[in-house]
Image 1: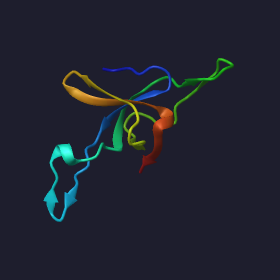
Image 2: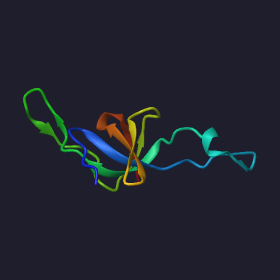
Image 3: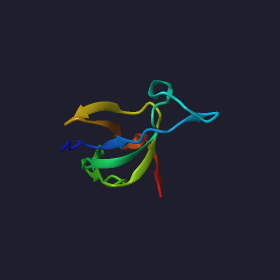
Length: 93
């Protein structure tokens, strides 16, 4: 499994189903997903004084993130998105 470093978070992005007038759009016409599930979390952000600030999110959280945040990676046949914790804007209940 992927283990992120520092303040990075590994997400499994959830594609959005878009319909226009009852027609489901092709996958290449859909926008980049902005929600995902946290798969793994790094140790946290290191401050200038050496202290580590623990991440707010945890494995299993469903989150919203900035539209163009992070890097997409393929690992073990799955697609993941690796983002900095600061790019996560909300936890969805």
